Image 1 (spheres, rainbow, N blue to C red):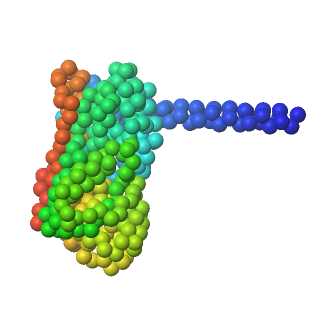
Image 2 (cartoon, rainbow, N blue to C red):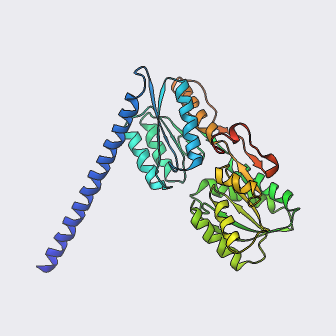
Image 3 (cartoon, rainbow, N blue to C red):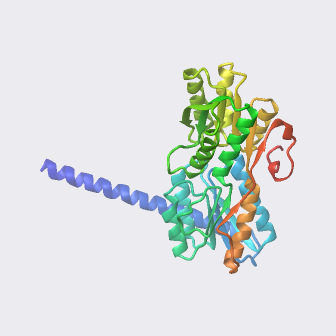
Length: 335
């Protein structure tokens, strides 16, 4: 009797939990649809196409620029762009937003494909007649129409070559990266390009690597551990926007003022640290251009124009001697 009661209690609990998830997801879809309607109503009635851009993190300076680039294109064309993303980096949340966009039957979706889980969702959208463009991070095995963004392997190569030049080919390196596993495409490619380049120089050696999970605090923690365990480290390579800040904070705490530090992206804080000599080089990308171009190419897709399989945006190595920055490298980041 007691056993039967327990089984029924478990089944009822599972049913209630499943029902709760169903109503939560339904509510989120309704909220998404409402936001889309509000966006549409705020635009002119003649707007023909509705696009959704889903970034990695809404409050991040880098993704703010991607959104601003898309909005600039929106102001020139007969489109409405809805910019979405998690408050903090969360691939699962991005996938939920992606699914909501598909259910809302928008005209086009622009998405950062952080890992392999995005491929089936991209294919689902395309099969339902919604073209998908990947931005910043690609999913080349998916049915996406095109990729717009950095050649991340090449960016890693450029970072490695810059470090070789700046250290005269002699460095003991610690690496802090957003992610090292095979599902983290972007950072894996930046690591591969970097490692393949420095492997050609005998005087350079990597002694430690750790993941920051795109967190400044985690980057500081991991850099601190590396410096404590490897007193001979002379240089750091960070593969995400916040890694350099964390590395510098750890170095300051340990009074390591002679480290060579390289990181990604011309965020305001990274530029400030570059000016102060705390960061030695930044791998600069073009997020504004990525966002702007994504809308232009989506329109080409919808009007039947041919598009390339990949559109690579420019990558530059920025040192103190390159300041002040000009053009798209500076846009929105030094205000």
